[in-house]
Image: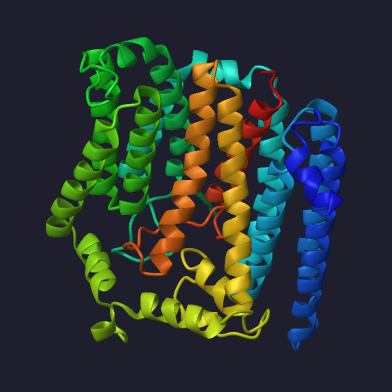
Length: 437
């Protein structure tokens, strides 16, 4: 009970318990991973040592990460790094179980991602650079987007699959993962600069009107155009919805206008209706969302198997390596949450949701602490909402609560670009959490 109390009182006690809390959480995570990797070793009929390589890399990353953070950011939030490492370690277990051929790549990406997180977190002027060079970063992001449209490929090799990757030899990455961080930084900087103009347009404090000057309308039109490009040329419904949702939420936080979320919801619905008529991939996802059962052995096979996996999991799951989640196509990527539900059950689902919820809560707490610095506050809100919105879209999607969007579950799904971007987000939040307020 003392340890639990330490977690929730760390802010009130200054930061004295930061190191102790972080180390204890990392030790608990390491024990969890050890037990599960040991179970995986027993389950496999052929003796494999790859599980232990994954665990060793994770432990080295955790030790180096915690040591450097303690040296350079002693005032950081103590929960962000250990929870992120716990989820990413759990992701290694899942990927090694579901697609062993990809587990080695994910382990390499984990080491790269932790290194990138540390670089971002301990760079003294990183936040100032994000604000100062926002237009350069935006131009770079747009060039990446155009490059994907013109030169994009798909590592799977399928002819009709979305071309969302850029490749160099055998290395592929998704520019949209970098673009989402760039856009959040740009919007946070721009909205912070235009904060007085946005707020001045409000009438009688009711929040039903915001200034419609070109300086305010500019980023709205730009963001809408980027989302349309992604939706039309890349057929990437998930990324388009994610970008536009984050933008509307950030604009709402900056303006306080009730009109923003209402108009945003209407625009998303309108875009969805147009996309349903224009794009077969969107029509397919809407049809199988409304009623997948008539095509359970055809177009809706993936979502039906996902629902069966949740049902098979029960309260405590089948046990690691004991379920049959591999019946779900691409389970190690888009549907990793379904595999987790089958083998860890409701207990595993609640644990993952709680961990993501804590990350979101701590991120919003950081935003509140920096409320006097509008750019830093908006940046913390935007980065936190990226994790929250992306997690919600995929977890609700595989449960058929919303249409499937094809985004990855942060830290758990296979994907080097996604893992790298998610760790960079944590690096920025760690930097923000260590600033005085």
